[in-house]
Each structure stands twice: as C-alpha cells, then as structure tokens.
Image 1 (cartoon, rainbow, N blue to C red):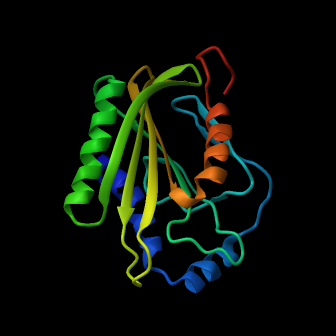
Image 2 (cartoon, rainbow, N blue to C red; image 1 turned 45 degrees about the horizontal axis):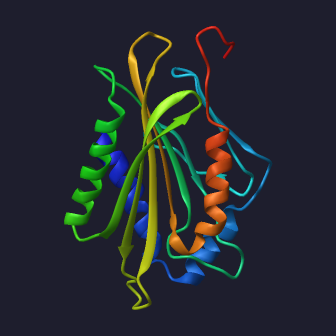
Length: 208
C-alpha cells in the first residue's frame, strides 16, 4: 500500500503532462472555488496543517491519505504538471527512523524511474523540525517528456517524513509531499513555506 501511494503521487503528476493545455485548463476551471484557507487534521496523530485558499481539496480514495490538494493553473497559463500536496499517515509495527524513511522515498522514486516514467536529475536530503517533530527532508528534481513534442518538463518533488506516536500509543509515520513544475517554483516555494510553518502536532494534553 505504501509503495502504491507514493508512486501514485508521481504518476498522477505525470498524467497531467499528457493533457493538452486546453484540456488541463478546462478541467481546472471547473473545480476552482476558493472558500478560504483549507484546514487539514488527523486525530490519531494530532497532526494539523493549513493550506491557502489558492489550493483545492481532491477526493480521497486511500485510507492512508489525510489530504490530497491541487493548485489550479492561472487562467490562460496551463501547466504540464499542476502543483499537488499529498499528506499521508500510516500506522507502523515499529517506530520509523526518519533517515530510513527518506531512503525509502528515494528507492520508490528510482522504481518509478526504472519504468521509464521519469529521469531523476538530482537529489538532496536534510532534516527539518516541523511542528516540534524531527522530520527527514528530501528534494528530488526529475525530468519528464512532453508527449505532444514540446520541451521537457522539470518537476520538483519534495518530501518530509517522520515518526509520530498515535493517541493509541502505537507508532505512526506522517509523510508530506509537494510536487510542482520547476517553472512554478518562485510562487510555490513561498506557499510551501507558509504551509510548513502551519504544521502542528498536538501533545496528548492538548484538546483535539
């Protein structure tokens, strides 16, 4: 399930590359309806996060998904890989090591690369404190081809993964994934930082 989930984040992003710009624009125009900031919460881990109103929530078909958000392209500016945020939580048998979590993410992306869906250009890893939790941090830049014969699309895939004890006392892992086209980075990077600053993990003493 976990491998399918993370591969799905990449493959859905790549699916956007197969749409004609007019098709992508029409699809986006149908679902744009800003209604204020989007609040995301997961009771079992005490996780909360807020995304700006420029994003919209997509249907969730996987029990491990906390949220699946998309950011429609501006009118008249369709993009091959629309920005996406995916937040996942999964109960584990043993506590997660954040560094091993990052290594697993790299391995899964390499599996997608082996299928011919993308070409990894570079990877960078670090650690970051989010909501008081030490998270493994990963950035992967990869390239996908435009099936219409246009220029290749350079895509940024950023991941934060870390352990979190659940309200039941059992170990969980939380994964936050941002995917967007490199050409959109000036805008999306600012929104990414705003979203990450909003991440909070409630302590057992805090009201949920």
